[in-house]
Image (tube, rainbow, N blue to C red; front, side, top):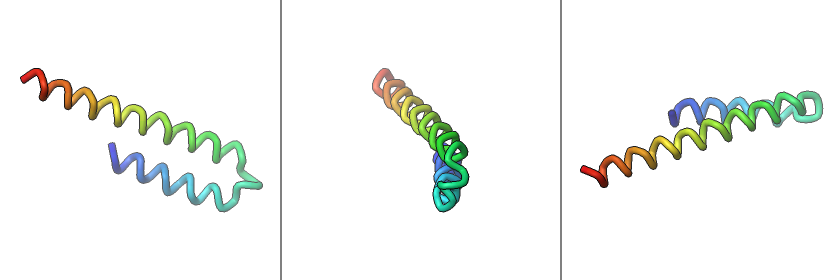
Length: 54
């Protein structure tokens, strides 16, 4: 999951260099990154909760 997040961050950074021309693309990539970060944190929280129950 972390690798996916980092790949999207890199893509977002590249798109931001050309922000004036690709504003919609930057927003789309940013939203995709946000979703992955939320998913990652939810999965990590779930792992911690499972460990607590053991």
